[in-house]
Length: 127
Image 1 (tube, rainbow, N blue to C red):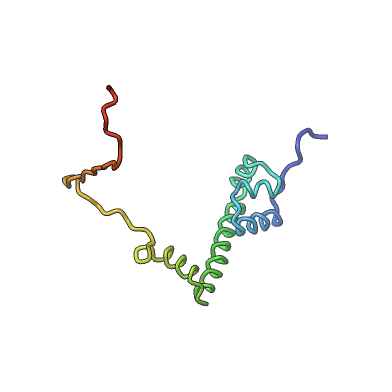
Image 2 (cartoon, rainbow, N blue to C red):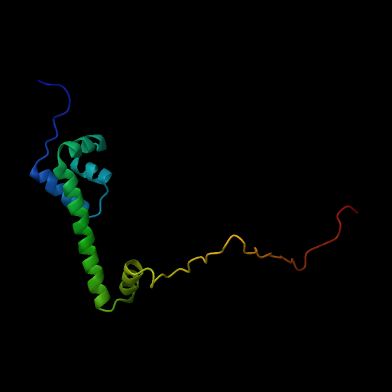
């Protein structure tokens, strides 16, 4: 009887599960936990079986497509939050919610800030 752990077999069932988990947004280390192998083993298996890397790519794309479609449908139905989120991410040049810092040239003078403390005790404490 050989010593050590049983060999991890990469079969279609594993590839399908990896794709499904990637579609749900899981990171690779989380996928490893779910399929019961170490990250080190997973990396080796990806190098040997390109189908695993392809499954992750397909899964991520499917997940993004599913959520994008749902977001788009909500935006089309008039959900203001969805509309704003969609536009801010798809057209940030025109729908940026944050002011961008203005560019200044190196020759521009830096403004001086003066702070006046009202009601402060200004007596000399050396009395």
